[in-house]
Amino acid sequence: LGSDQRELDPTELDTEFHTNTKILLDDEKVMMAFKAGRDVSLFTNRRVMIIDVQGLVGCKIEYTSIPYRSIHAYSVESAGMWDRDSELNLYTRNRWHLAKVDMDFRSGKTDIMQIQKLLT
Image 1 (cartoon, helix red, strand yellow):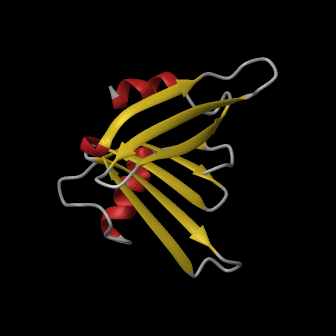
Image 2: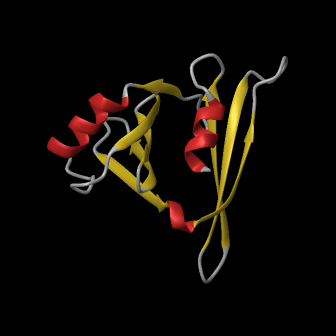
């Protein structure tokens, strides 16, 4: 994910993703949610889910689910004077390789330390 994400109301998305798209488990709850363009990132009580809407009209959607037990490390970087984005990097590992997921958040629209608390 590249674009700067802004925070959304998690209760609205919790209802939407349980009733409309049905991509969340029955006992899963959206804790934090962010949006950049048409893409959405969800932090639930079970996993991080990245929803990437592709194409000109958004017919193709990629869902990436990263269970918290698969995240072996993470790093956060707060916004600075010249770089106005805060960043989150998730490091996951499976049997074959180490993967890194980068997420940028818009300064002033996201509390990166709240995300850090959730991951910890």
